Length: 52
Image (cartoon, rainbow, N blue to C red):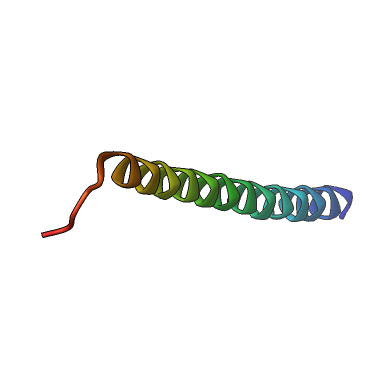
């Protein structure tokens, strides 16, 4: 009985950890995408880039 409760707690903690990790990874990817698009925009303005 104690072992079952312990395994449920660890599973719950593991799920919480995974959710936190997903949120962190998503946030980092969003920041990367935004900074990349900003860099592309800056490059286009600097080079007077004209899309085809």
